Image (cartoon, rainbow, N blue to C red; front, side):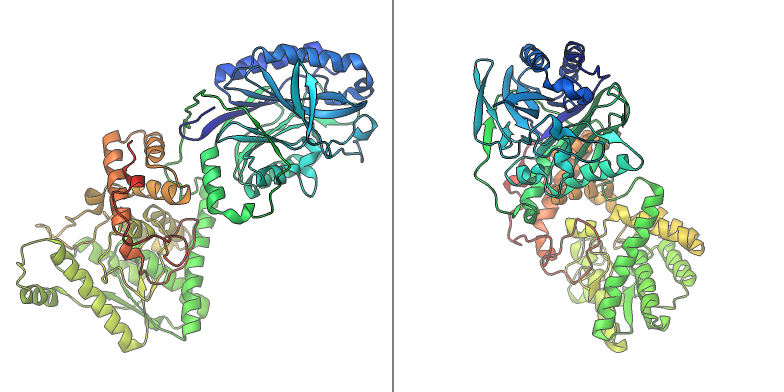
Length: 631
């Protein structure tokens, strides 16, 4: 089974159980298998003891029940194609012992039988009355349906990129669940046929348990619990179905019949395992049997919905708290640097744009943390050839609202002299013309910092660093870069949420957010903003999307393009493709700027510091094989 983009469709199944009625339950199982085939499901998981019902109790002792179940499994094999793996809980007799097991079926074959390792025998549970624990059954094969079938807890079912492991109900709740070892030895999808009863608070606990197990093992997890129809003599079953992947609940249902379906990205999980390898550094075992079931069936799924803004939480209340937390982390980073370096003064260039606004907010918070005199904040405005009335007004209103004094130094005269000294035409708006202004601004900031014994605070953000959209040794350089791991799309949100906490900033921050993003280095005829960054590079919405999936998930260019088409449904595909080309070319060709970045705090899972998250040669070819993959 092959998936072009690494996505597999998984499902858990729940139906009205008829306790002890094998044939009736088998009819429901068959119906749901056919429905799963129609829905294109690749892995389908039924509850524990699905054929008989978990609450059949002493009926488990009757051989008729066991024999009838095997007959139904043999029938079921005939309808299960190569694109579907079906895991069903049942009973199995071996050497005059009964085992609570999971049957694994695919491509018209019984691939293996996995017994339950741990049997609960406390409170409402008394499974040891009927079953034997299977944790020590390994390297065993049994003859069934004229085939030699692997039986044991040492089975990993290998479908190529997807490798499936099984644990059953209580196995998940013990101190060291079998899924830990299964994942250490290659399993990346765990399925759990379960029969978990309900009482107050158990649902939430179970959900967190599944979510955490999928997180720490970098795996997908499908949990299928029996529900309505099980005996309510002493307990109640709700049919809790959970699909989780990498610590995120993909889909979940409670007390519902039918299929609960989710799309899991095995490719992402595999990339995470390669990157965050401490999770898999425990010693692996050579005692596992890998049950190979390779086939050429193609299952090229893509999600129907993709979050266009992966750096931003969608829940507004959570987003607000997260925004304040991020600003606090940035401020703590700066406060620590000031404290340890015995500085009480900072110098910052304020442009009236998003980045310098966030930086001055961070400085403001850091000074509060250290109880420093705000006279130590030296804000300089450095208007040049293209500074607009809009940004000049933004600067004035922002610093007034923050009660911070500022000094204005017009750089036009010095920039003009510099260009004349170089015999550079004043009406030739090339890179030298633009960078002259950026470097002169940095010169003023650095020298002023020497005068006041202060630190120059950098304002450049993560998106600009990714694209190399900064002047080398100009705005690229500072003594501490507080925005170094904050992407452009997130900065807007941080400022918006900060203004909710401080309403006196709301109007000026709204004006700043509404101002087009611009380096303001090329003059326009009407003194308004003529040079707009997103007209040069493409939308930052797209660039931040590309950055997240390229760095955080290590996705291919082709996969990023396909996901972007889904995330930005209203954006022309050619524009997405062109912007992606720009991202790839600039990301690799501008590494030399990132190789000598100033210090700055990491606040999210994506960062580009050469001392931390991104170790990349400055000599890497920008047209390398990764960036050239065809869309």
